[in-house]
Length: 104
Image 1 (cartoon, rainbow, N blue to C red):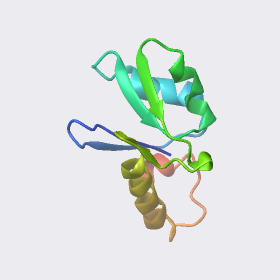
Image 2 (tube, rainbow, N blue to C red):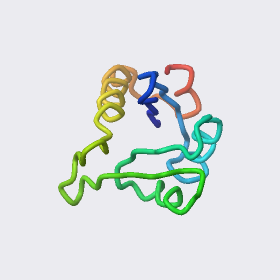
Image 3 (cartoon, one colour):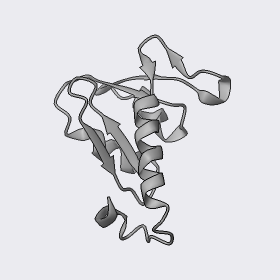
Image 4 (tube, rainbow, N blue to C red):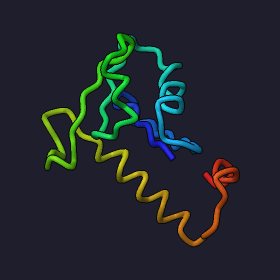
């Protein structure tokens, strides 16, 4: 599951995903209108290819290095929203990834 937040509108998107890799992330960001798009992430390796792509300006913090916020770079909104989604889904144990979109 990926959570995207548009910092301009505060619109939140919870997107079910079967895998957490570049092939999932790139299509999620492809239809955004601003170019280059600034993407704020944590240090998750699946985001690394975005750093070298001219379509995106990637800024990130690495929680493993003790970084949680750096000026305008933070991912707390997404992480908070994801934790609420997980809490909401927890009573429904055993949800198949194939049915996750229906629950969300």
